[in-house]
Each structure stands twice: as structure tokens, then as C-alpha cells.
Length: 137
Image (tube, rainbow, N blue to C red; front, top):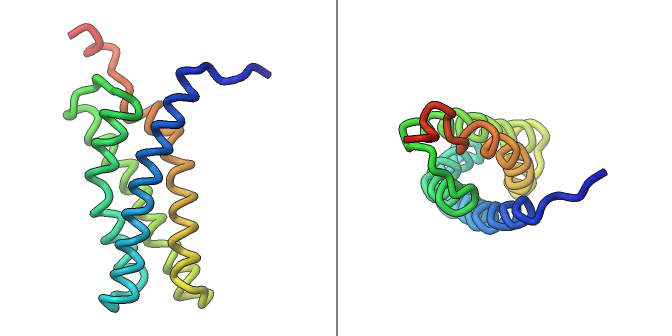
């Protein structure tokens, strides 16, 4: 088994910086909206996830993947992947908090782990890759 190339390790580290920052933003917002604003856990989670979306897109495009893909190509793909993450952010508190009676923090932590794992793989392969026909423009 070969080890990852240094460029892949640095990209993974950049992903971690952006991901941790956005996950902390999401967690603080979700926790605040749930505990202080009194929103239901699902509503708070989806709202927090949506608010963290803009810095996530810009950070991953510009810093992590250093993508030259045009926003008109990358943004719709990001939004599709973002919708998957939003579905997880909605389903986690619905299942873990409302159905199983676990504290909101469990759903927040689950979302902060599951979404980044999915995103790292799909962002580089589907979202921030330059299309072959646009690569030479």
C-alpha cells in the first residue's frame, strides 16, 4: 500500500482547517439556537448548517482545493452536496434527539463527524474539479 503524496497530505490539512472552523461555527450556532433561542433541535441544526455554508464553500474552493473551477460550475455541485449535508444535519437531531431522546450535543457531534467524511471525498472529485472542456480557458 502506498502512502499519500505530500500534496494530498497538505490538502487534507487545509481541509481540516476549513472543516474544523466551519464545524465549530455550525456547532456554536446549533447549540445556541437550541439552548438559548429555544428552537427545536432539527430547525436549529438546519439553520446553523445553512449559515455555515458560505464560509465552507469559499474556504474549500479557495483554500483547500485551490480550485480554478468557475463558480457557475462549482457552486451548483457544492449546493447539491450541501443539500446532502443539510439532510444529515436535519436527520441526525430528528433521529438522535427527538426519537431516541439523546441530548442535542450527540446529534451535533455526529453531524460534525459524518458530513466532513463525506465532503472530503466528494468535494475534490465532484465539486471543485475543473471541467475538461473549461480547463484550457
